Length: 90
Image (cartoon, rainbow, N blue to C red; front, side, top):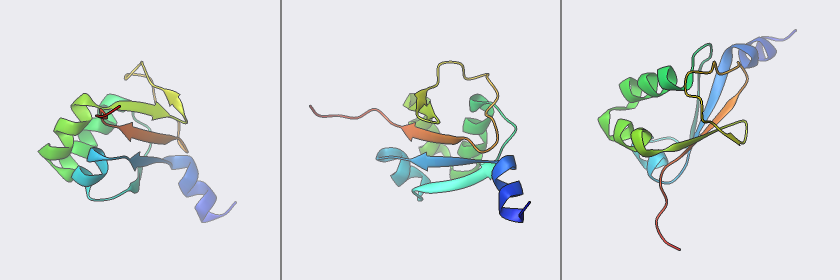
């Protein structure tokens, strides 16, 4: 097993879109796994500041492409979490 393979098993990829990307200052980052979505949101807010925290409080989340409705469910390592802020327009 490679070191890269081990890292994939213990981390979560977070991808930011629109206002979330602007507030985080990055399009994507890798963070430690082993948490639920509420814990992840708290960590991301501490890492990037209250501006991102405000966006996250209104955002929807996809976990491996599926809408996440249980914010207490553990996020499996190797998961991708997409942060989707409210979108305007139409």
